[in-house]
Amino acid sequence: MSRRAASGLLLLPGVALLAFGFLYPFGVTLFAPPAAEDPDVLGKLGGMLGDGYVLEVAARTVRVAALTTAICLLLGFPVAYLIARAPRRRQGLLLALAVFPLLLSTVVRTFSWLVILGRNGLISDLLTALGLADGGTQLLYTEFALIAGLTQLFTPIMILTSYSSLSHIDVKLEEAARGLGASPGRAFRRVVLPIALPGVLVGAMLVFAGAVTAFTTPLLLGGTRNRTLATLLYDYANVKLDWGAASAVALIMTALVVVAGLISGRLSKVGAV
Amino acid sequence: MRGRPLLTAVAALALVFLLGPILLVVAIAFSSGDTVEFPPPGLSGKWFTKALAYQPFQDALTTSALVAAGATLLALLVGIPAALAIQRRRFRGRKAAEALFLSPAIVPELVLGFALFQQLMVTLRITALGALLIGHTVLLLPYAVRVTGASLAMADPALEEAGRGLGAGPLRTFFHITLPVMTPGIVSAAVLSFLTSFNNVPLSLLLNGPGVTTLPVQMLNYVEFSFDPVVAAVSTLLLAATVVVALVTERLVGFNKVFGK
Image (cartoon, rainbow over all chains, first blue to last red; front, side, top):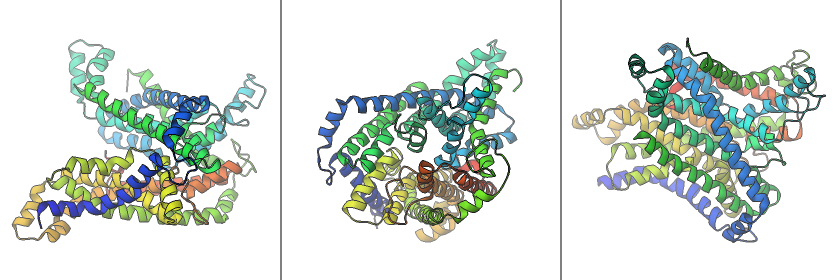
């Protein structure tokens, strides 16, 4: 058997699976849904782009995802930096604690926000006890709730990617900069940050893409008042049964994620220079 | 950490923010009250009893376990040969093949779920369980190829060449040299794959049929209609099971290996 044929044989089961379970359904649904009453997705898409409501939902999705990414970065990077600078034998445990939540379902991780932010929730009770509100402060179904829930969901990813680029940086580099008279802040900005940047940007893209496509959190914390593209897609697909519209939303969502990926690819290359 | 009070404060805040809400769920699960409240009025195990006796959760647990185990096995069976070809062979289109195998990780899971619902369940009349199994295998394939591929990339191909040079056939070389070298990668990939599939919501959401719904989706449905500590109890049981999995993984391959660290 030739080498090429052998390579082909090893790849064949996977390629067959991807063709049938991914490329075919994905391609047909996005570009030519057969069962929809109006099979013209691009026509639907055009209509949607002129529809204020859909644009508002898309803008909210991007806004919430961008803010979530920024806060994840502000919270996650310091944690990653401290873990990378902790004694070797403690790094493993600290990292495990920080990323353990990734092993739990989003339902488990979102549930407690209903308790914290709800009308009879912890924050509402606290505000009432402090005399700042007279009970029943509803923080659920707001963009604030969405951002809080998504940030808690995705900060571990930021920690993980930041840590993996920070842990490659020799402490001695930073010490050398300090020895040559740089302040801690300057040593950090001029030495650590440029080396860590590509990894951090990859993390930021993962968080942004995750926040744009997240479903559980917007469903439970955003409700119908603060829909995102994901809950809108679900609404079209499962409640309104308008599959053409669902496909058009799916196209917008996919395009956003792919564009974010391309931009971060460019940025991380620039950062690496 | 001395001399960096601001940094340490932010990091402490972040850890409380990450782990606090999870511990809150555990406290609520042990409540003796009739509604979700914190702090709970007293302690009891009644919500666990109720959660375990709730038939839809039992059925959903069976479905989720079946799908997660089946999809993990399939993804490894299909992914390991692909990782071998991508890491160990030189052929035209190798980069394209790698990109193809990693591509499902890029697309939104909800969109893939919707596509599988439309094309496999509605058009081709494949059952919900079949669509779940196919969808989850596609979802896990990038992990399987990447993690087992990473363990191959770290191993020295000279070992395999030596085996071949000493007269072992390709199969014998694979089972006696390549497979043992890949084992830590395979264990990591299996743990990550199983949990990823078991916890998934967006892909599984639309792929349901009579009596076939995955556990996280069933929990989500429950929370949407009734807000009581039952879901906190199920969450706590899942949390306990996940801690056990994490500890066993730590003994086997090192916990952080699961994330490629």
